[in-house]
Image 1 (tube, protein in one colour):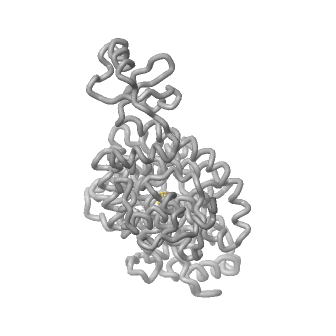
Image 2 (cartoon, protein in one colour; image 1 turned 135 degrees about the vertical axis):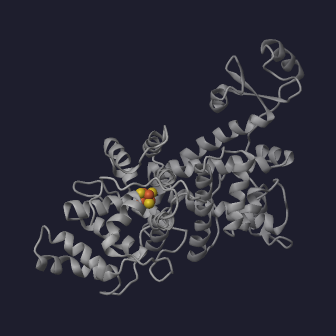
Image 3 (cartoon, rainbow, N blue to C red; image 1 turned 120 degrees about the vertical axis):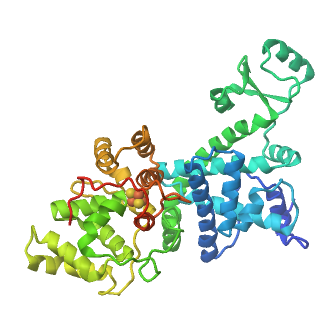
Amino acid sequence: MNFVARKRRILVDTGFTEYEMGLYSNDLQMYTTPPEIKITLREFEEQALERVKVYRIIEQTSAKGITKLSEEWRKAILDEIKAQGLKTFVKVFTGTGLGKTEADYEGRRRDHITHFICRLTYSRTEELRRWFMTQEMDLFRLRWHYLSSEGRQAFLKSNNLSYTSISEEEMSRLLTLSNGLVDSTKEYYKVPFTEVFDLISRRRIFLHKGFGYITSQDIISVIATQFRSFMSKQMMLCSNLYSRIIEDERLKAILGNLNTVYTGKNYTVGSGNAHEIDIKQLGTIARRAFPPCMLSLYSTLTNQNHLKHFGRLQLILFLKGIGVKMEDALYLYRSEFTKKMEPDKFDKEHSYNIRHSYGKEGKRTNYTPYACMKVINLNGGGAGETHGCPFKTFEANQLNKFLADNISNPEPGEVREIIDLAKNKHYQICCTKYFQTKNPGVKLNSIIEHPNQYFELSYSDRNSTSKTEDKKSVASS
Ligand code: SF4
């Protein structure tokens, strides 16, 4: 067979080759074959970013406490994907499986390409792999829901997943053995119990002699287990490949940043988000409206009269973003630092960097305040360092103290919930819970993604019934 010729033969009515039409015959894929396409770097980056947005929407929707895989959860995700203009994904994610229009094939191709770019991006650390797998698994289950019966059968067949329903004879034996657990009106599949741990833990299965008997609705758990196991192995292979791929500097720049790229509102100075900030009130404002990361830095600055390099930078860009003028930032840093150093030394070693951060020195760049993903990935927490995200960098007792100092009269379980979320590395969800605890009057439509977003929402809530109290953790400026 002339495989190459088959691959290249383009079918007129869709613009896709025969090979591609085979590869993209179903809306749901297991992504067993990497794409072979030519794509510009710009498309590569733009399309991958679209998928990253989808992952974040899934994570944020789950973080709102909506039951995963429920109708409400699916609707919230799809509504948000639509709202963010990612129409191609909506089509392929809600496809019934076997559509044959050009748009169907186009959607599946984009799904395929972006999955593989993200697979590479998120393969490089254990933490990233875990995060990626969680979102991909949720997406997989969401999509299975929309497949028609024919779409599901075709998916199982094309992926050699030969699960078949049990015979009538076996069914009658099962009815006797199961003591009423098996429902005679439903169709059952027999699968090795090692493939259905998920169902066992949810007590949705009848087990007998090493096999689980599951309904056709529950077969997704088995398929998802297969998908997870396949993906885990693939992610390890990708992580080996990653170091070779990033030898190309252009790919390194895209892949290395994709997971931390901020896709929300712009908080660069000049984008209309700054407030009039009275520097003399900054201590009060910090206690009331700064997110934990910035409150912690501000506290170090005013209590210890010093901040290390990354801490200075993280705080100064945030202050610039909320509207603190450069002269005021200079005044703040100078008045604190010079409690422990000579004014001349401060002027020589630090003034330039503050002016530089404000775009008044060097290349005069309008530097952007750091988003949460960037702050989280700064990996603070070293000796004498207070930069980074406290939910990640604080030890358990330090976080406990911070929460006790900054949350007045928490509801039962609130603090425990935040600590557990931090333990499980859900830093932004932690921050969102913390925000909600301190600002019960503010309605959040998404999780906290940016320290300046936190500030904007919290600061604007000055007339609400905020629980925020001036507490002892921060000295007034
Ligand atoms: S989640 Fe974001 S805003 Fe909250 S403390 Fe961490 S970095 Fe700051």
